[in-house]
Structure formats: structure tokens, C-alpha cells
Image 1 (tube, one colour):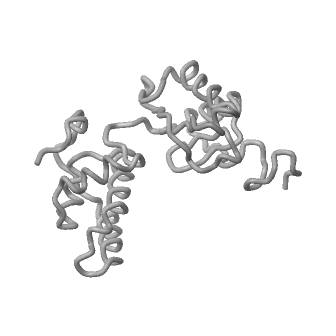
Image 2 (spheres, rainbow, N blue to C red):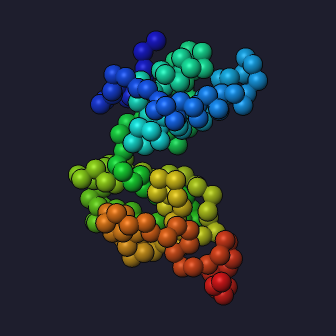
Length: 196
């Protein structure tokens, strides 16, 4: 069976795990009982995506299917079901902007405005320099610290348009902005609580 049509753009013909990642893949597989190795599909797909510039080509899914002795279509199903898998190229920094009610009420529209005005991108787009991709997502589970954005694997919370713009500037300059609350609050303490 061939891969779904929306996965055919810009696909490399081959994929191979690096030696270090191949050892990690084998370690993941060994964690599962005999005849249940297919349970390692998600960790292997995550490993492949991390190795391949934060997106998952069909060739990588095929390698995972072969390693786990699964029909490729089963692996495609997993990759297309979970939103954490990017099946097309994305920017160096994937901005997942939460627009669910708590984030929206606390200013996610300001975050989207920064994406549009500063980076020139809207939902599903990548900046011309290839640095940033933006996607609107449903709840990421940090409602009490809304609005928030997940950038690659990190959460940035208690954002304003200005603080988000500063984070984007720092990322573009090769710096590492502070993750978590941008107001300094600890965990999910009330916004009025003293900072530690």
C-alpha cells in the first residue's frame, strides 16, 4: 500500500538511523515482551523525527515498520493520528500556539498577531527563512498559565505579545530563552502569589 497523498511532498528516498539512534531504537524495542515489539512504534517514530529535522518522512516510517515487523500502513496510521508527528517539513522552531478557550481568553490572539506581523506566518505556514513554523493547536494542558505556546519540546507560559516577540527574537539570534512562566511564577501558583 502506498503512503497517504499528503505525505508525498519533498520526501527523501531513504532513511537510516544513526548508529547511536539505532542503539536507542533497539533499547526501546527490548523493553517490550516478545511478539509485542510493535508497542515501540511511538518511541521509534519520535526518535526518527528528532533525527530528521523535526519531521517524519515516509522512508523513516517504512524503516520503523520493517524494524517492528508491522505493515507500513499501521505505522502511517499512528503517525497521522498523533499531532506530535510532523509529516511534512517544518521550520527549525515549531510554534504550537494554543487557542483553546483559556488561552484565547488570556490573549492567544496577541500571540497569533505576533506570528503574522513579526514572522509573516499564519496557521500551517513556515517563515521564508525556514526558521519558524506555526500551527494552532488544542489544549496543551497548561491552562492555568495561559496563554502558552509549545516551541519544539518546551513550554512557554504566561505570555504576552511582547514577551512572545522577545522569545522569537532570542531564538532567531541563536539564544536559548527561559522556558516556563515568563512572569516568574512557580508552577501553577496564583498570578498574584509572591515569586520565589
